[in-house]
Image (cartoon, rainbow over all chains, first blue to last red; front, side, top):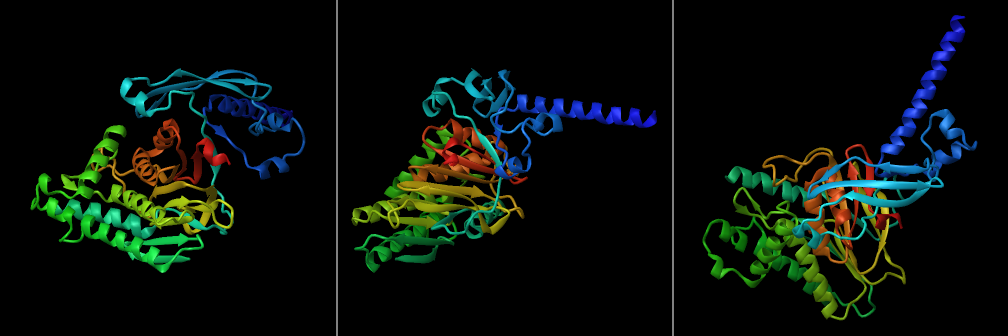
Length: 151
Length: 242
């Protein structure tokens, strides 16, 4: 009897966790791109929601979702996304800064969505590398420090 | 042909793949960068910047280049709502703008010489013109947690990329709207634009905004951004999906 109770607890918490995960996806305004490696290890179809893993790309639940109001430094932004057939169908701006000064510099068209990924080492066969070099950044840092002391 | 010189306290690398390139083309460009250093270095006592900070010269004596830099910085300060400021605690420090400006001028100098396939890399900020071996230039973004690694590759032609950042050991970019507050939520922010000056300025300004920096870049027309936070997660605009 005790064992049955225990397994019930496990099943219920698992279900709650999987619901929680799905809710997380709903709330996300930016899309999280899961790496290809993760998808190959999870080969059984429709297993994602049952196992509590976040849904694979292209399997978002259909519906209309409203993002939180985000304070980007020039004003508030709020986005509404419509998911159809598991994919983003449309994005609508519910709130968008539109004062005259910023509208000069800000694209008044619909803003494209941002994407996220975990950084990964790439091939080093490149012509040039862009980055904050120790020397150039050190230059700025020490300059700021020097000026601070000069005050 | 490729050459590197240490000027303005940083390595400046120029590679030119046009067939008619000559040593003189490199020499002239590096001479220009040295002149910029003489004029704008806050370390050199004889520089115009030092003279201005010592109040030895007044506005009517400013050089044309200085007037151009000041005008540019006023414009960008307005556009970035005060996030970009070349004055720090009352002292003039145009280093943040001079680098991008110098790369732009250096590239113009090469174009006037009839050269159209090259890059100029000044401390990790790069202007790329034309092609190399018939292909766009392959540009990597340095791993802010391991400077020997590349974590993103973009191919560019007639574009520029600038990266503002800090290594884990220390912060350095100040938020001008909250005096003395250093930015620490993000470690690297790269901006791709058709103009190196714009890329450089936007990278510096956006980095100072912390995590909101990428939203700022996203709202800008014609530029792309790749931001890396302290956890090693990158947030990027559509241009970086290619």
